[in-house]
Length: 162
Image (tube, one colour):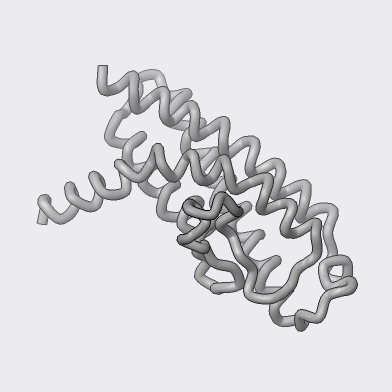
């Protein structure tokens, strides 16, 4: 029974990554640095950092999607491999979305109480960029809630095995 739950979650995450990754890729293919800066007061460095973080997120989504696909296509389902993959997706994709290492945007923890979007940019951005994050945020929030278990459970298993 446990295998079926993990397998179902892996399938759900795969579909999420497929959709989110496609949306991020479409955005990156359509946008230029100049179009992002248009009418904004932010500096070049800030927008370059934003694009770098979005590209990194796209790569993490693609890698996670590939890992999910490989595990789901295997002749026998490996629950440990699936759990490790879900943990890595949480650590890379989800954490990078809500708190990128470059710190060009951040999650407003009060958003749950205000009903507003959680992602806030450090400087003003174009509507196309903020719209992308509005469209992506709900899915990332849902998957984060589903995968939080793997994040804590996997860390606990690693600590206990030492």
